[in-house]
Length: 393
Image (cartoon, rainbow, N blue to C red; front, side, top):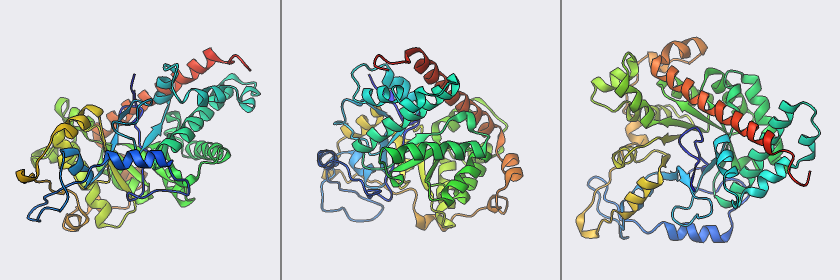
């Protein structure tokens, strides 16, 4: 059984900084060997450049020379096909793990349910929340041992419109991670891109706590997230496209369509150019990619979350050296400097301008995403309530 950890409500992204190891902890040597073996040497033809001296074996190799690929589904008892460099621990992920009796993460959840601090809480809702926090952190700590980059931990979506609540929850999770000796440099905290979530990101980043803003469906969200200094900004390309196919009346989407652009890809391009033209520190992640053309159109972005079937197709598409296969970087800091923004897009975003610029697509997609996250969180708590106490408590 496979468990989705990167694009659906359980969007996954444990990320490396600039392709290097983050934090003081390093992955085990066996993982390093597997990672090295999984990335064959690449020959890339970019524009009029002459080919590199190494051999290009398949399309996946070429894509990896431009952007980091994060599998959106991982069979956790088999890291061999596409070793994950990134992961998110979420309520959806916990539900999936609980359905796998022999998962290597079983003890992480059982240990959470046996925690004496949680068991000592008289209020059932506080007890279940404590169990959930412990389970997220215990599984996140295990993931940090398997993957080389940062582990992104989902923040309770019921707090999406509560800045102080988000900050309090992140501090609780960070304290638990400290107790199991996971460095804060190995961590991201995944927060919905409501105005309150973006404000929480700004305040947390000012403390040196790295944040991962998700559910970005409009330029106002993306630009405000960049201005807040979010470490990672995640845009769902396919979901924006799906909305555009079935709805109308969103000015931002209609402007992209008039220019002959896919609205999801257009938002990624505009956000990338904004980040790089104006010197923001944020890294950009594209999720909900649906086909190879999406990936080829995003070459140069920091991270691409891709389904396993698509990765397998890229890996099986062999390109021989004499075919002169061409891969072109679509997103680059150089091209970003040439991109022109309107005065309205270059404002210092506040809550009023943010709300008025979001548009119906972002409003509907954020609401749907939050509903999914909240439902998953409640299901985890209900499940933990049914199986608590474990046999030895």
